[in-house]
Amino acid sequence: MKPTIYATFLALAFASGCSNYNAPIIPPPPPPPPPPPATFTVFETLGDSVSIADKLTEFRTALGGGLNAPNSPPADSGRREINWDGVPAALTDIDTFPANFFNVNSKRGALYSTPGSGLRIDSTDFAAVNAGLAAQFRTFSAKKLFMPVGSNQVDVTFRLVGTNTPGLVKGFGAVFADVDRLGSTTIEYFDVDSTLLATVRAPNHAGAQLLSFTGAVFEAPIVARVRITSGDAALTATINDISAGGTQDLVVMDDFVFGEPRPLGPDVHVTVGNIFFRSAQNGSQNPAVDTIAAGARITWTWSAAGSHSIRSTGIPPEVFRNSVVMSAAGSTYSVRIFHPGTYAYDCAVHGAAMTGRIVVK
Image (tube, rainbow, N blue to C red; front, side, top):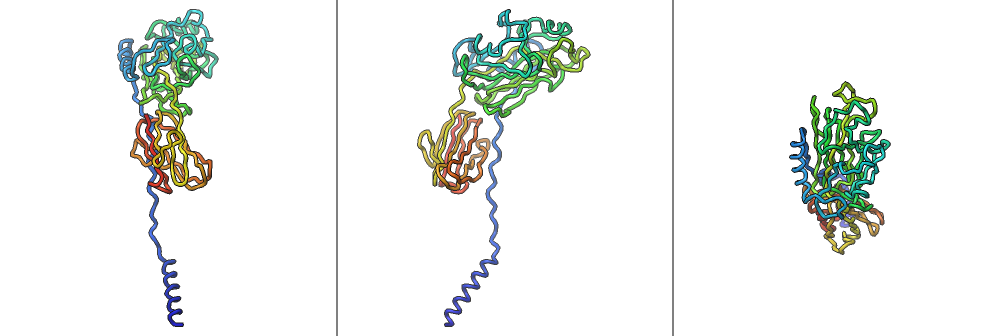
């Protein structure tokens, strides 16, 4: 019996020792940094028509390609421009300028909307709205200017030229007349999900009636809409600019220049299984390899129950936001990637046993 008692005692002692042993806690690896914001270059200048023209030349070069003529079909590159001066007389100096004119009548892939009551192309320097504005604004391309009615904001949404298909542009810029106060006039850039990508401010002057230009060019066509805030307030029959004793900075718009609207690249899908990632497009697996256009979305779908996650393993800027560990069949996780590059990922549970790669162009 002694050997049996002794063996039992050793087993109990070993179990007791293990239960009191404080094993070191190994923290999980830190998550990758958050995805970098969309990369863009700002172009801006303040001055007369000559200095504005010089900056516009730089902006056009950054957009790439040449000027695509009005009513020409959608192109793979280049730019579109709107200067208002070709708008027919019947649609000038009225408060009901058609919001779809520049995608239906003179096709350039731009639709307009405003929280105000309408849109106006004006040939009187807006003296027809308010006689006190007769000497307030100068033009870049004479003679017509643009402003929403009853608001100081207008949205421009892009379409493949002459169609109802949503389009994305690489950049957008605008010429403004008489920006007195810094921050009164801005352009906000939004992606297809209405996520804000960037905000630029038109440069201001002091005591002189000058023109301002501001715009941004991104690495790829990812801008679905811009919101322009032109000055502090809408134009009315009685309002005065701050340079004429008023309390608001009144600003109007001249030329718009923007990249050729391009289609949003198709979304891609990856199956999450036990234990694999598989591209639904080409069948590649561990690694699942997918190629998408900048701005497109990739979605992972759990094909069966099993604990997995999507973990970005690249080096900044080629990283994206991780998912949590999910286990239910039918679970999904999606990201939209704007920065061209190659993005590696794996499963935080299974590591190198489950891998994938996204090539963004």
